[in-house]
View 1: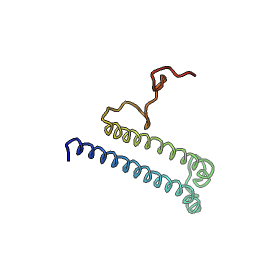
View 2: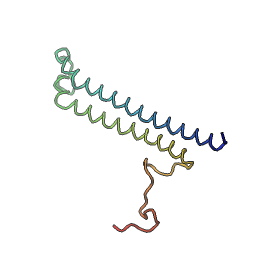
View 3: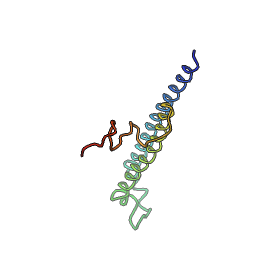
View 4: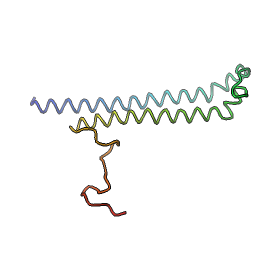
Length: 125
């Protein structure tokens, strides 16, 4: 095998591994967040009788969770997903840039588009 062919094969293998790790992380994160959301949705009502004595913000915990606590938890789960996937997107973008042989130049996963367009001429609004 030629030296450059071995290097290319290693770069492709690294990119494949990065993509596989990205999707594995994505699926595991979704499963974990959905499991926690299900626990909040179904767990609290199932044990509401035992939790009545716990007070939170002046209300019993089951009432608070039903009224607004669950919504706050769901919003927190969405924010956790956004932050975690932004980090995963950055790691995948770095792997793609390494595969292409360049330094990290952009923040997105696709080709960078400028206001000048591909030809260098300004795009008409």
